[in-house]
Length: 176
Image 1 (cartoon, helix red, strand yellow):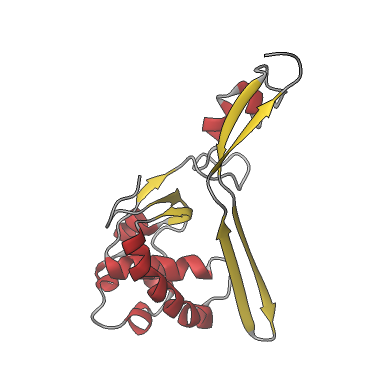
Image 2: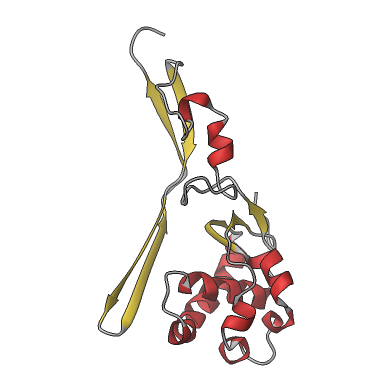
C-alpha cells in the first residue's frame, strides 16, 4: 500500500538513463532535488511505470510537475516513454522514492520482471499452458491500464488511463 511520500509502482527497465539522456537542469531548474541523483540511484528509485499507486497528496504535488516537464522532454525525445521520463524527473524533484513491484504488469512475453512467474504458478491461468479452471466459481482481482499516443502535425498526444480496481468473478457450468 502506498503512503504519503512512498509511492508504489511496477518496476520498468528504464534504469536511470534520464540523468544523462536529457538536459535535466534545464527541465527541472537549477535548485531541483532531481539533480542530486546519478544513474545508479535514479535507476534504484525511479525505474518505474504503470500501474502507479500514490497518496493523493503526492499526486497533487507531482501531477503539475509531470505535466510541466512533458513539453521539454518531448523536445529531446518523442518515443513512447516520454511521459515516463517526465514522471521520473518529477518524482525525483519531489524525492519520491518508489517501492517497486514485479508482478503487476504483463507486457513482454517471458519477462521475469513482470507477472508471468506469478501467474504461471496458477496452472489454470498459466501463460505457458493455459486451460479451463477446474474450480466452478473463482474471482480474480483486476485493474486495467491503457496507454496510447498519437501524433497530429508536430504534436504528440499521450493518454493513459487506469480503470477502477475490480473483481471479476466467474461461474463455470454445473451446480455449486
